[in-house]
Amino acid sequence: MPRSDSDVTDVVVVGAGFTGIYMTHKLRELGFSVLGIERAAGVGGTWYWNRYPGLRCDVESLDYSYSFDDDIQQEWEWTEKFPAQPDILKYLEFVANKLSVNELFRFNTEVTGAAWDERSASWTIDVSPGDSVRARFVVWGTGILSTPKIPDIPGMETFGGELLTTATWPHSPVSFAGKRVAVLGTGSSGIQVIPIAAESAEHLFVLQRTPSFSLPAHNKPLTPERIAEVKNDYATYRANARASGLGCVTESVGKSFAELGEEQARAELEKTYAYGSPMRFASTMTDIPVDPESNRFTSEFAKAKIRERVGDDALAEKLLPNHYITTRRLCIDTNYYETFRRENVTLVDLREEPLVRLTPTGFETSAGSYDVDMFVLATGFDAVTGTLTRLNIEGRDGLKLADKWGESPACYLGVAVAGFPNMFVATGPASPAPLSNVVVSIEIHVEWIARMLNDLREQGIHVFEPTEAAEQEWVAHTNDITDQTLMRFSDSWYVGSNVSGKPRVQMVYLGGVAPYESALLDVADDNYRGFTLTK
Ligand code: NA7
Image (cartoon, rainbow, N blue to C red; front, side, top):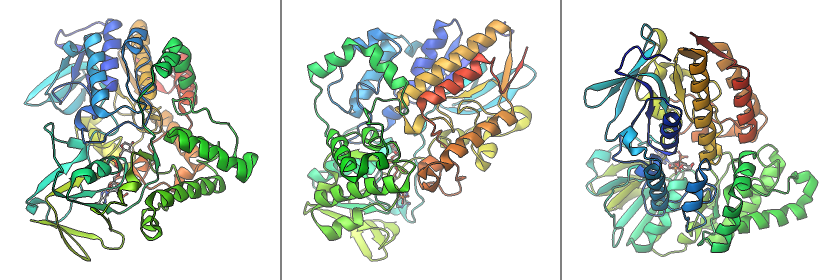
C-alpha cells in the first residue's frame, strides 16, 4: 500500500481495551503506521469504565488473559480464581506498558464519526474537539458492552440523592454506609453490587423486573500449585481453549441428558455447580442449550439451589427465573441470594408493583413511595451495536451505519460490513464474542484482521469490502444455528430486546469459537472469499 499522502495513517484503531491494545501492537509489528484513539484517560475499555464494588469477570483469571506472548502470561500473577475489576485493569496497564502501546494512542479523545472517501480510498475520522484524522483502514475495537443503557424513568432529573450507574461508576470511593440505597436491575452487574451494598447500607431496596439465574462463584485465592500447573504448559492450556466451543476448557463429560439419565445428570450438575463457573455449568450436558427437556432439568436443579440459598419459599418464588437457562446471561455471584435473608434488604418486585417515577426523595411504584439517598442504575448496555450506531459512520454512497444496523445488524463473519469498505468491527454482531471467553474471540479477530491487512498489502490491494450476498449468507447461517437452539426464545441483550426500538436479531454466532475460527481461516485461505478486492 503506497502512501499517497503523509497525513494518512495506515490504520486507525478505536478503543484501548483488550482489542485495541493487541491490535495496535500487532499492526506496528507488521510495519503499518497505526494510531489508536481512546476516549478514556488510559487503557482498559470496559474495565476502565465499569468500576462498581464487587465487579468481577465471570471467566477465570488464568483463561481471561492474552495468550499471544509467553513472557506476558508467565510474568503476570493472577491472585484469585475470578479476577476483580481492579486486577484486570492493572493487568491491561501492565500489558500496555510492556508492549509500549500507550505511545500509539491518543487518550481523552472521543471519536464522533467517520466518513469513507471513495476518491482517496480513505476514512476521515472525526475526533473531539473539532479535529479529524485520516486513515486507509479503520478497526473498531469499541467492545460489546461499552454503551450503558440508561432507562427513561420519569422524574429522574428531580431525584435529589446520588444517582449512579454501574457502567460509569465514579473513580472516587462511593460509600453505601448508613444510606438508604436502591439498585435497579438484577443482571450480572446488579447481582454483583447488591451483596456489597447490603453490607453497609442502612437499607437496600432491590428493584427486580426479571430475575436471572445465578450460581455461587466459589471465588478463592489461586494457589501457587494451580498457577504452576497451568504455567508449566500454558501453550497446551491455551491451545485447548482455542479448540473449544466457548474459548475455555470446560471438562464436560460430553454427554446429553438422555445419555446420562436423571440420576447421573444430577450428579454431574452437582459437580459443576460445586466448581463454580457458568461455562462449566452450562456445559454439564451437551444439549442444555438445545433440548427443552435437558434445559428444564438443569433449570429445575438451579432453581432448587436458589430456594435453598434464599431459605424462604415465598421470597424465593419471586427470585426464580422463568426462562430457559443460558438464554439470558447465566450469572455468578458471591452471597447474592443469601443477601435477601438480611433484615436491611427488601426485594421490590416490579412485576407486582411497576416503577412509576423517581421523586426528589426516592422512588415511587404503583404500590407506594420509598425514600432513598442513593439510586443505582444496573440497567445494562445497548450491547454489541449501540456504540457504533451512536456515531455518525458514513460508508459508500453516504450509507449510514446507524440506518443499516437500525434495520438489522448485518455483519460478514462478525468483522466486516457491506457498504463500509476498509473497515473492521472487532467482536461485531454475528461473532461468538458475547458467549465466549471474549479474550479468545478478540485474539482470533485481531490475528485475522492483521493477516488480512498484510495479505492485501502484499497483493497491492487498496480497497476491500464484503459483498451483500456474502454478508446475507453469514447472517442466514448464524440464524440457522440459532434456530436449532433454545436461544431462539431469548429475551436479552444477546438479541437486542433489552433496548426499545432496537431490531430483535441474534447478535451472537452460536456455532462455537473453534468452528468460527475455522470459518474465518477458510475465507482467508480462499483469498478472502466474499470480499470484493480492488487494486
Ligand atoms: P443486563 O444483564 O442487561 O441486566 C440489566 C438489568 O436491568 C435487568 O435485570 C433488566 O431487567 C433491568 N432493567 C433495565 N432497564 C430497566 C427498566 N427500565 N426498569 C426495570 N428494570 C430494568 O445488564 P448487566 O449490566 O447486569 O450485565 C450485562 C453483561 O455484563 C452481562 O450479561 C455479562 O456479560 C457482563 P429486564 O430484563 O429489562 O426486565
